Image 1 (tube, one colour):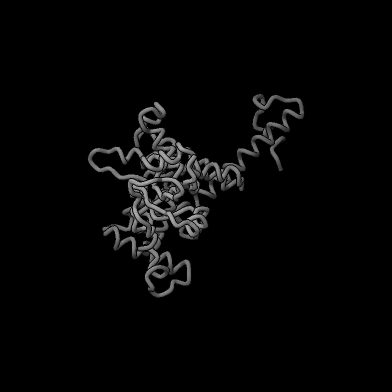
Image 2 (cartoon, rainbow, N blue to C red; image 1 turned 90 degrees about the vertical axis):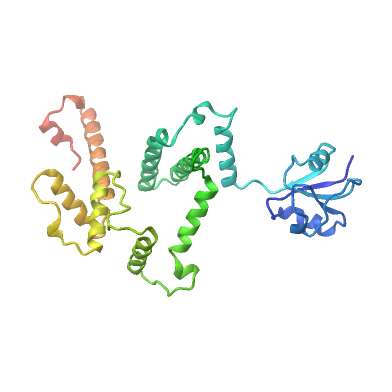
Length: 306
C-alpha cells in the first residue's frame, strides 16, 4: 500500500487543499505532463515512488495512474462548471456521443437560438429568477454548441476559447477608461458616444447602418434605425412617409427609440397584457355558464376586464 499523494494541477494552478501537504513534504516531484520549473520541484525520476507527492496534469499520466491504482490519495480541484459545460458539449459532439448533436450545423441550430433567446426574455419580463437561471443556461448552450461546430470547420476552425479571447479583447478595447488609463467616462451618454466612435474605428464602417442586424424583429429594427439615424442628426421629417400601416409603425417605433424607449419591449408588454385580458374574459364567460367560442362582439365587451 503506497502512501503517495497525487495532486492534479490545472495549468500552473494547484488545488488549495493540496497546499498544506506540499508545504510539509520533502519529496515533491513533477510528473511527465507538467513543467517542473512551474512548481519549483524536480521531475520524477525512475526511483521509488512511495512516500512522495506527485504533481500531475491528469489522472491518466502513467506514473499518476500507477500510483492511483495502488491506492494513492488524489487531490484535485473540482472542474469549474463553465469548463465542465464545454467538456460535456465536446463529449456529446464526439464519436460515441449523441447522434442528434453530431449532425447539427450552424444553420440547423438557428431556430433554437431564437427560441431560447425569447424564452430568456420572457423569464426577465416575468421576474422569474429560477427560469432566468435556466434560460441563461440554454442560451449558453447555444454559444457552446456553435463554438464546437465551428471548431470542426476544415477551412476556418475556431473554438470556445477563441470566442472568449475575442470577447475579452473587445471588452478591454472598448473600455480604455477602465483598462488603459484613458480619461474617465462619467455618464452613460458619454459612454454611448465613445462606444460608437470606437466601433466605427474598429470595424471601419462606411455607413451608420453597418452592423445593424436586419434579421431582427421589425419593430426592434425600426427602433434601432431610429436610434442610429438620430445619433447622425437625420431629422424626423426624412422618416418613411405615407398613411399605410407599415410606414406608421416605422415612425412610431423609430421615434420611440429616439426618445429612449424600447419599442419592441413596450409592444410586447401591451400584447402580453392583451393576451391576459382575453384569458380573463374567457374565464368570466365560463363562470357565467357560457362557452367563450360562442361569444360575439357584445359578449366580449360584457366580460372584458375593466
